[in-house]
Image (tube, rainbow, N blue to C red; front, side):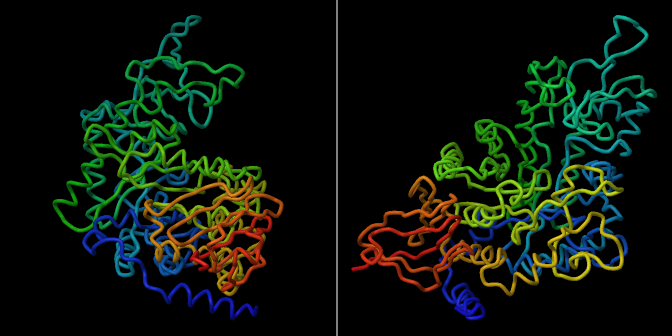
Amino acid sequence: MDLKLLLAILLVFIFSSKTVTICSAEENNKDWWKRTNYYQIYPKSFQDNDGKKGIGNLDGIRGRLSYLKEIGINATWLSPIFKSPMVDNGYDISDFKQIDPLFGSMYAFERLIERAKEIGVKIILDFVPNHSSDQHEWFKKSVEREKGYENYYVWHDGIPDKKNESIRLPPNNWRSVFRGSAWTWNEKRKQFYYHQFYKQQPDLNFREEKVKEEMKDILTYWLEKGVDGFRIDAVPHIFEHKDFLDEPVISNVDPEEYASLNHTYTYDQNETFEIIYEWRKVLDDYTKLKGGEDRILLAETYSPLDVKMKYYGANGKKGAHFPFNFILFNLNKKSTASDYVKYVEDWINVMPEGETANWVLGNHDNPRVVNRIGRDKANLLNMFMLSLPGITVTYYGEEIGMENIELPESDYIKDVRDAERSPMQWNDNESAGFTRNVKPWLPVAPDYKTRNVKIQRQKPLSNLNQFKFMTKLREKYNFFDSKNFSIKKGSESVVIVTRSEIEIFFNVGTTSQNVKIDWYKKFEVLFMNEHSNRRIGDIIYPSDSNYVIKLLPNEVLITKVSSSY
């Protein structure tokens, strides 16, 4: 079939049919977040609109909001854009109420909000409450023991060295996520301060009521600016045990590594759940007072499933609208159909009644999907995620199949995770259309000439057009609702997802598979991925195919099922 004709058929399908009405307009507005495809933007890497710094900025994001609508995205969360020394790429905040000049000004932010509301894209900010930068005024005042700020951070006298009592040692064996002791001595204050991440990121003390009030005030400040919610960073780290007890040691692990301890006293403490419930109340109270649509909380946590569920809420208290679900990160090149089914059911079966599922494939802290699962399966996995009930969260560039870059031995290197943070590939111009006239802050992936948004818009079975088809299908057939969802194994390598009359076949294996089909059904091919030899509009009759559907390796086949009689 001619490629232009195939693209035309795709567009006709996407835009010709009426969307299923799933609730009233009022309910739609209130619960918008339950029926939304989310997208993470890493601001430094999305779009540099002026070509002055080689770093993405707020005006660049504003100029690309229409792209998000094009691909079926209605909400985006931005990694930190606040004032920062950039020791940890913005996760070390020196002023929670100011925009870092690297990204623009408050005026630029307000223009971004204004434009987002015009076209219907929700803006969600990264909220980083666990710690600040050591350059924050709070920390400087706490070092000086300025009245009112003495206990803003976690300070400890330490313990005397038994060999030399004039030397103080850290109070316990707690480790930093980034290796080594989580305690650093401050000579001026003559105490250790606690930091679960870099030493330039001192942990705030949430046992201090003033700190709690500061954070609630910060939430309200940005709500007044018009944001639609917050993604809370590093949630399980917010509280630590008040008695500073040593954590149990895990044998045969380098004692300097974070993984050398069982984090019973520094991770998922009971008080952490309560503070999330308090922040949810701040948002709900604001909505009641100001009206309008729900403002939402998203919680980043890599906790065990049973613990993660507590972040939804408990004992009548509401928590995060959803804690991020990273369970699909477990899938790899060798995963079978049983693995795919199991991971989906594992989440759905433990989720509290009435809550909304969510599915995440990537973010700025993990290798890209292509690098984890391979080029042949990466797009299959994207389509699989988009077939599931509830919310989906896509990391920028995954929709075109971007992959990690190799970090050169140069001034680029700062964080090994930067490999998955390379500039967005918009076109085949210099620097992939991300910037102009200047060197981008990270190298552009070498395949940008052939893998970019501009080229993929023109290819009917490109990653981008498959992604766009799936987001439209989700809307048209209400994939957000779990009531019309089922998942099963068709063979050792084939997963079958059913959404009302839509049946989607995923061959996750490396060999062709024959899958039995019911004798009374016929299957109309709506779409497929690049590994299929089917065509849009093909009709599969059971009797004509010996009651099986043959699927090629890594093939995705999307069909509409009806009775053949």
